[in-house]
Image (cartoon, one colour):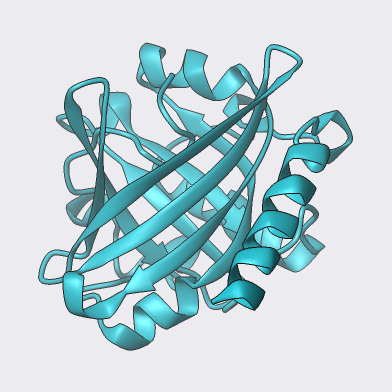
Length: 202
């Protein structure tokens, strides 16, 4: 299954009208700096997404809840990813490495023998961010939304909705996660206890 953020994309940036009020608060991250990576560091929750591409739309709709950790490695242009995803009423854990392409503002990850790309877009709220997707124009555009908490404020949600509308996607096409369906709590706690013991022993 494709991870909720790791979606094969071409650049969405040309589709964003810089003069559009709906896109005014959206900042394309080019290039990605160490400060950008520091902003992404830590725990994030998958809030929701909307994709016109059938394959990725189906994958997104199967996700009941998901959260993950980003641990940037500045010198290596990589981010260590630890993800906990609830799908099909079971918890799936994944640990992998994300490659950072600083110059063009994209992130990528290898999954099922294929490299998947995502454009990083920052909102005006430092505690949220968006990953964008576009396959050969507006026909298959898409976006996924993340926050440092499982629930976002009305203002944060509105910014996501405005951005979605900016690229021509209707609000009814958005699929949201549900923290109440998260089944990864016990495994996450176990991993955190193990990590704590390793740090104490080192």
